[in-house]
Image (tube, rainbow, N blue to C red; front, side, top):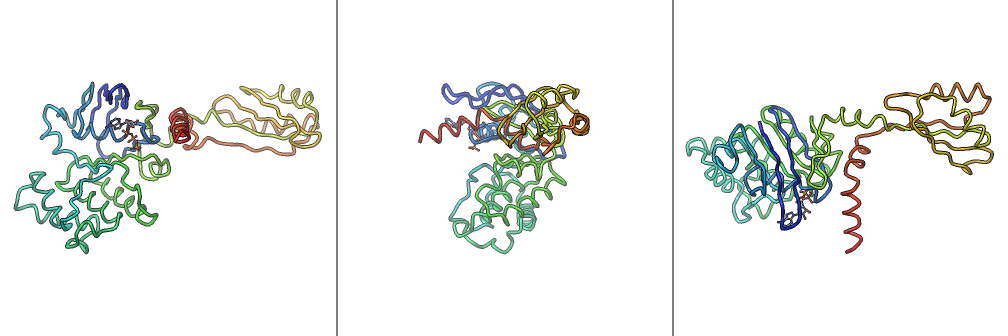
Length: 322
Ligand SMILES: Nc1ncnc2c1ncn2[C@@H]1O[C@H](COP(=O)(O)OP(=O)(O)OP(=O)(O)O)[C@@H](O)[C@H]1O
């Protein structure tokens, strides 16, 4: 179990992590989701003891990562965004070296190295120099290093970045496999990535946790934002009159000129209310034909965009400046 309490990280005047508070329970796949620069890597680096926090604390199974680093780090395997691979070593040499650093007893080392190589499917390349491996294989070597010692918690920073679609699918399968025995935390700025594998999503924007829940609940959270779009034949006054008879509408936006002698309306109902039948009936009763009726549901993508809008706009503005 990981407890993150009131975590703050400042780089000079820049607040990269802004009072983060969350708990990670055992046995699930957690996803850190946020746009570039949201503070995901900084948070993961602090959680794994690679970086000191400005304020706050991280407890790994009750051990403070700064005060009891050895005890705390024993519980964690970490794949940083840029894994520190030694290019001149073979895969086998590197993993043996990593096992030594992790203080895995000498007599257990070779068996564990064999086990992790089998798990991430790199047995065939064990005698190749890391510098000669493809990006996908290097990522697997990094993963193997994180899994060595079979820690309870495995933390992966953008594990699929730069991989091709086939490699992404393979790494996802591997993550699911790992999650059978380990708690996995991974980060990504790609929603589909997180949605695909995670049981629980934590959305980070500007260093703040803006939402954390299961993918299903996050979608429900926003389900009040659904809209019904219609195009009705008639003048705006007539259409407004009919809309006025439909109950439970929070607001309506009218648009003229969509079609000749017709008005477009975007209706936002109160949370959880499905107004489609009522819309149909009221317009039929008024003999005002509906030329179109469509219903849009909020997807998790909408939730992500809404919750991180400011951050995305800022990134776009910055990119525009360059
Ligand atoms: N060493 C550093 N010195 C100064 N600013 C930094 C440093 N590392 C990160 N930052 C800034 O802190 C913020 C958070 O960065 P971080 O790398 O944690 O974000 P991220 O969510 O992991 O993004 P990405 O997916 O792009 O890596 C960014 O604005 C970044 O520019």
